[in-house]
Length: 304
Image 1 (tube, rainbow, N blue to C red):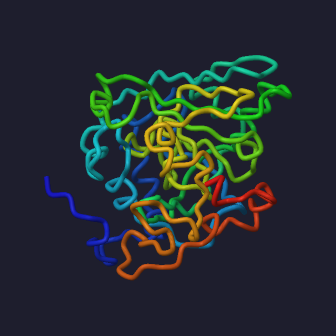
Image 2: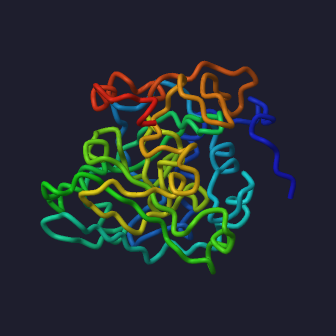
């Protein structure tokens, strides 16, 4: 199978959003095999969100064929090739730690926590490329409020499924598995932070982190951990996978910052997948007006 780089995909090959929406009803008839639960997950009933970026999303083809998901390989095309073997039903997410009451959520349970919303967000990879993605999900805060974080729950740690039989990339030593990420509690509770279960109005594809992934749009993409099975509130700042692997390259916060270069990639510019010319990187990926106040007084070069 020939996999082309998304930047080589012509604009004439990209399905316009209006055409996509008109054909959705046709697609529903053929997607029953993709159901995550007993409910009608194919054709997610998501309401538009006022928090969405006013930008045109990348095509579904681009979003699902160009991915970083090392559990399935380090090449951008590996997740689309190998993630299909991941079984996303049944699935459980354990939420525990410094909480009033621990809970275990199935995907069915998760969908009942809050109304699904479509959030069109910019995604910025630390490697210098970016996309615009129409996620479908719920605010993470709605889940955390159900477990009643205690005063000691100052940080939120996340963990991905650890199953080398289903995730062949975990047989390599590129990272210490399982994949782990973390947020400060105010970041986790921020209205922009969501748990995504879909994109383009349909069930989240495996290569994009099915059945549920974190999305934190003002941070570099690796912070938005995929295939989440564990959420733990704790008093101490968690050690994250990339921070453990290369602490001089990957800080805990990992906010998009054009003024703080990565040792291998300048962050001043970015290449939007599908575009030829690079564009300026925006502080906090353009979400500064909503999130910058959380970091007031912090040295963002030290706390990168």
